[in-house]
Image (cartoon, rainbow, N blue to C red; front, side):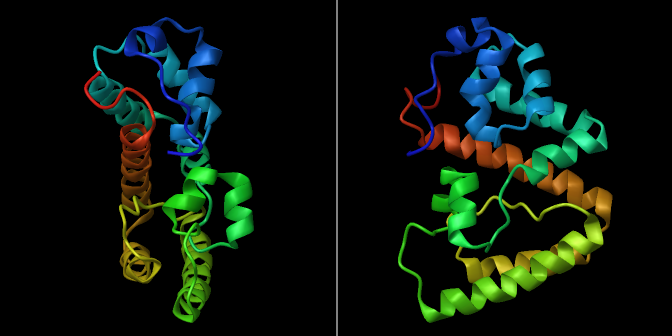
Length: 180
């Protein structure tokens, strides 16, 4: 996957200095510094599954300000493609901007912008979801459903999706593959 260098072996990740560990796995988590520092301190990991399981535990146990830093590290869904790409090549591809847009895509992006505005006004942070091959049109319903939840439930859901995104990025990277 463009944008993620092949990850070194788990043994190497476990031995890297904290700042190098954060730099190496940072693209998976949109480089949220407070979270990455905690994840580096949680080493060693017995497996990549253990790394991602611990990542979720850390994310959910952090102070809210650090949780929101992790969530808001992701670009807004449906934003201007150039803005998304400048912030995160991975998110740009995951949101489908590497494919030609139709007139319907442009309409949906506009509606998604309005829903994002409403979401951010209601909760105070970005809507983040594990896109997992969904079209932007499918995301509209997900944002609407999210708007009906309470704030703490949304933070918990978003953090779970952030870690799911990171795991999927790792699985799609040019690294040695899952199960190393």
